[in-house]
Length: 34
Image (cartoon, rainbow, N blue to C red):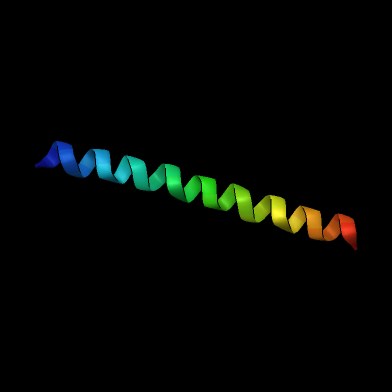
């Protein structure tokens, strides 16, 4: 059970990081376009 929760939170963390990176790059692109 605990192992399953750990792997789930690990996946969630990766997903959150990917989303954050995507939003950051989108913000940078918007700034570059002015």
